[in-house]
Length: 445
Image 1: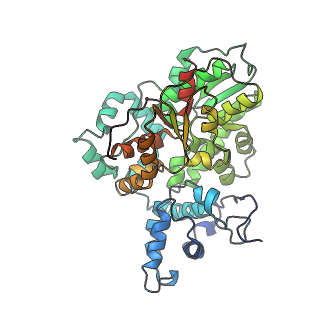
Image 2 (image 1 turned 120 degrees about the vertical axis):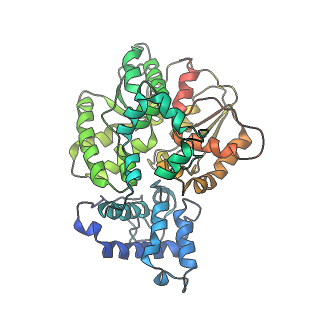
Image 3 (image 1 turned 45 degrees about the horizontal axis):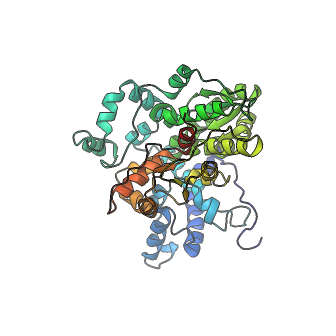
């Protein structure tokens, strides 16, 4: 094996059913093996906060080597990993098939899985992962929920910080009174039979965020697909399990994967493609689920049939051609390429899609926003998250475009929040959060 592992990265199935996976001594040995390699390499120093914490931990020890570091001090390193996968996909020279066989994110997942098995995940943290239950409740009382979660609410946000550990200044997504599945059912959209891509059929996976918090993304996708002749339906059986994965509850993710794959299998057998609205969810369906339940044929079939929404529209553009009618967008667009979009190894599909707009200036930022899913809103992480995302916020502030979008809408809001802390005039971009909303806008939909 040559140094640098020039072959394509290979990921092993996650052996979460193996008792050795939860063996504390064997896990500690693997953590020490990997941490020693990382300490000697340091290529990932500018990614998430895990690596600076690791390097400072070892450098500040008695011998300045791993042998003098207590294993109990590893937890902050594990906690700082956001499972963005960028170290595995873009930085690490020692990923499989290299003989070092290093997969840092999945090792951090293993450490969290042991914590979960030992009952060390805080109760409030576990409740935050129940996105479907929380979404249904939030939508049913959206007015009260949105009032309570506003950063400006000095009555409820300090209480949330004390009780749930959510930083009082962290922007939280709103809940909508009508879910995406409800709005889609009322829309009555029909596919344009004259569009070049007429004949395609797709089922849109709403995702928990798209269903409960921002149905506008899904409605924009539906309208754009209908304009381009695609017969589309919105389906939302349940959350993809990314929140549970972040907390090491792999069994819950496996259950969600197997049930959801069966639900979508009916559509796939009828000739429908599957489209995910949010890159984290697309990553789960495409890559993480097949590694968690590698023996499940339905999960494999769903993985092959799934596309990110930008990836799907670019595929239409390349093969059949888009429907006519796109118009320029004033003010220019800054598009942030989300980490979980990069981890899908599909290229900058959001930017590629937006460059289909005529006479529109497109600027691309391909760097971590620092948000990291639920990680970035927690009291212990929020300021660190803003620090990690500061270069992105600085670029957005400098460009001051008419539109700021990200494939991850939560990352987009986090970027704007970071930019708002910088000196200078306040940003006032359009309300669009996701690139597909700008395509819909350019079509006049």
